Image 1: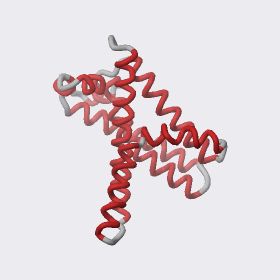
Image 2: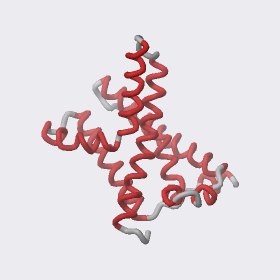
Image 3: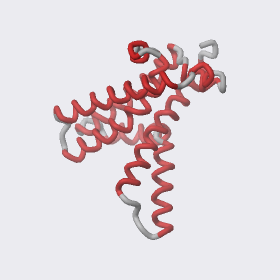
Length: 181
């Protein structure tokens, strides 16, 4: 595949780009939360995480055979060829979660709203909760805290898996509501 063709925007890039960009954006937002402000440096890093996710997705999709992957399962087909409704639901969930996170960092979310959306956040982040919880359980079982690099790797993988999980939930919901898509 030519470089220009690989970088051309297409629906097949949405899920891989989000899967790569989300952990990077998570670490940028976590740092912004610890520093107490979302400045220009954090905004530049967020843009960089989106660009990195897109370039990684373009490279990955140029190497993999999407049609062969799509034939494996209906969910793989939705990942490679997402329909308009699937993208709309996934985009709405991602934008809603992002808006909530930024508002929460700014302190503009009432506690009752945070209480009400906690189950939704737990559902969307279930892979992260399970992976990091497993790391804590194993660390406690062997009697020491894992190194920061291990913790960061588990969190990064957990966030990436949470993106895949969220897409699977959105695709499943779309399949139930609009099976013809």
